[in-house]
Length: 79
Figure 1: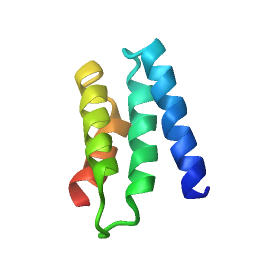
Figure 2: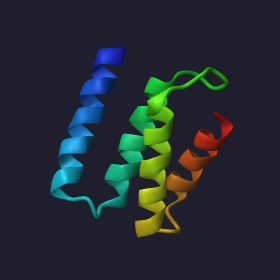
Figure 3: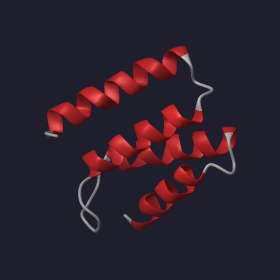
């Protein structure tokens, strides 16, 4: 996907979260999209990395055993 498409996806997940903020999988999907926008591993990242961290933490707060959230937190910490 192009950067514009990832931004569209980020907005779509944001809209879904306004409707159902309690769903941890929506948070992980928004975090994954933000990580894609942050760039490849090892590259400088901007506010997208902070957004990804925030949504991973929200997912883990709602579902502490969600493996996908733990894996994404590993990517956040790596970057």
